[in-house]
Image (cartoon, rainbow, N blue to C red; front, side, top):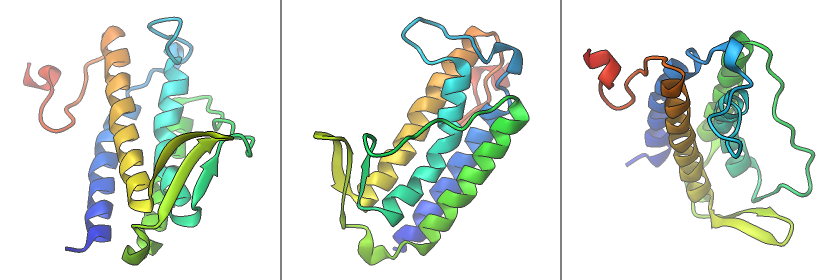
Length: 164
């Protein structure tokens, strides 16, 4: 089995579903959140749009320390900005996976915030983590959209909205 080929196929499938969700994010509700502890719709959508670029972390680095960088979410002002951010992130992630040698998949990889270790895995584990994060946060976005009365597209089959 060609694991890289399988990961690239999964990336494309997840990207198709993610695009269907991101296109529905209403600009006039960017600052809305369902709860004070929740991200705003804009924060959540931006995070989802950036996740595919995480594959570059897995491929090009052995560690990500949030305390060493000045990470700031990419500013977006419109749904078009959001979709452009996703496409840029997707292309970067895809290119990273394409250059990842299968022999490097079991190399150790760590995500931390200083001394606090959030994820201690392999490069393959980080790739899988990024897929999981996409699916997890995309499901959150589906709930946000549902609460805003926006019909939800299917992810792995038709949604209740598509079924009528």
